[in-house]
Amino acid sequence: MERGSEPPYATNQSRSRLRFTSGGVVSVVSTNPSSNILVGTASWSDPGFVERWYPPKLPAAERLPWYAQHFDMVEVNSTFYAVPERRMVERWNQATPDDFLFNVKLHRLLSRHAATLKSLPPPVQQSAAADAKGRVELTPKLEHALLDQIEAAIEPLRAAKKFGAFLLQLSPAFSPRKHELAELDDLLARLAPLGVVVELRNRNWTEGEQLGATLAFFQRHQTALALVDAPDEAHFTIMPSELDEVTSPRRAYLRLHGRNAEAYLRGKTVAKRFYYDYNDEEIAEVAERAQKLAVKAETVQVVFNNNALDFAPHAALRLRATLGQIARGPARQPDLFR
Image: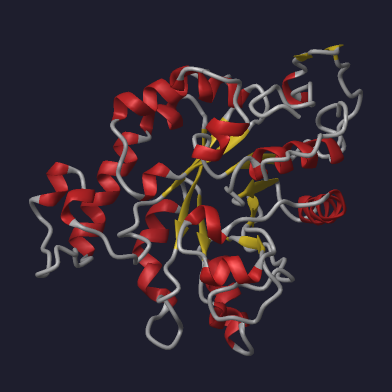
């Protein structure tokens, strides 16, 4: 495929919308056995997407509408770093179809990652305390204030019924040796009615007898534990891919990080950590897994987080085609620049 050209996939099945390619109209798939499976990517504006997937010179304001012609959902990554302004969220709302969904990653401070005062909304900065390096200490009062700001910001999505769930992506340092899941009680009690998914990044939460207690905790809170496709490596920062427990009947949430252990463990940037291009056989495996999860949950959301180059959107489109959600066009041509 020429870099930045239209992907060879044509129909957004759930909206019965025809898409055009250089070869003409591609017909709608007549049946969809995977209608409760939503597929998308983690972010819609990664540099690799802009350089290789979107049409050349597409204005930034037109990227989200173009993305929404190909997918029914997206995971917002920018909200991990800063709470968005409400006006920006309103533009997201206006740029997408009525049945499009946004999953919103929670601020890094709530995820127990290091955060600075500058990363917090101005009203919250006034009540936050920081150490000599400018890092903020999370307190119950600060957590409550930050959640107030986040909920107010995403209200346009909730009002339009375009809000899917919050994603709490915990730090690998949040381990059962130093922490208890009960530390999340207040946060989950507040967010569970709205929709929340928790991604653990420390494998020890699922090892031995700890696994039963972990699953029971999320079941009790009616909160989805994020499932993963990740490298087959028993490192404490890599969650096991074989775990397919659905802890909330409302949703199963599958995040695909790629299967490159060397990159995952030693990559210094997001693009390097998740540098992995799923092949067709692996996409078929993911499709089968998603269909099995769909029997257990009302909705399955599959998010490709292999955000290096244009790997994620192409993999996500191939998964949609495998699931029968869209028609598939000509085979993807090799990119000599990879």
